[in-house]
Image (tube, rainbow, N blue to C red; front, side, top):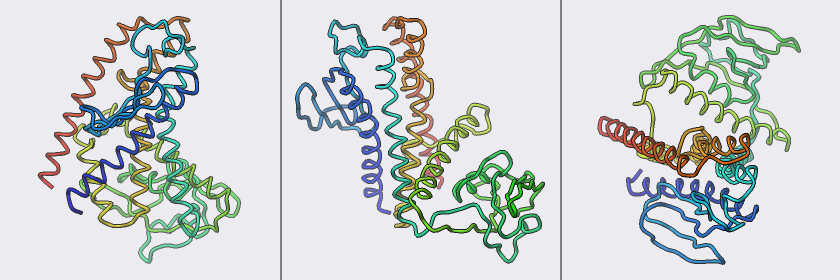
Length: 343
């Protein structure tokens, strides 16, 4: 896909996701009676601004973030509509609402994807490839319940469950003729993709006629499946199972958006958007300084202590966190560019 078109598409996607995130903060702040002087999409110099009521709505040059400027958010204020003068539970709702909106957007996109398909998926084996080796243990009609310790509910769950198996023996739990059976060391063939060992799935699962309840269930499980994958990835990064050079930032994600968009498969494009917005929602909930999760940590401390941490000390922590976060972004972006050049 044309580079300029790819960049514009990435800006549009990130802009929409950021707007949804900030809209969560904004609407919740308004709902609990907090004064909001500015609602901004993007960072840096102003491109466009208009005012409605007490709020300036601003579009800024760099599409790398956004913010909702609330009265009394970072300093004390005597205004009863200031953030600092609201109850801890109200402040927690306001800060958590951004990530909640990202997760809700992901769920709605998944719902649209499922509605566009002719059937919903199951985990019931309906077909084996001619050279399938898993049929030594699996049988047609088996309903797969677990792969190792990973519970599966949809075809997407099957894919997620096999991602990290590598060459390890696969333990499966299935429902066969109404009976729960554990299958030990189910054999599979493997292939190497970008230096990673991936299990070759040699079977297919049964499609099921859509009903409103099944559509909702599949949409929910597709969303929670991505959430589990994101949490798992963070855990592996912390424990050293993932290396820093495996992370992708805006440059890497923009490249992936271009690759997916070039296939002209709109279902895959929307699936990627859902993955990005869920990723952003979960990332923002991590209890790290400068993120919403870090602010929530201080608010829960306020709830327990009965009084807030002094704003200047909280400010120091978030400033340090922002410095480290920007450093991480520079490293990740550098790695993205190196991969792009080599690639």
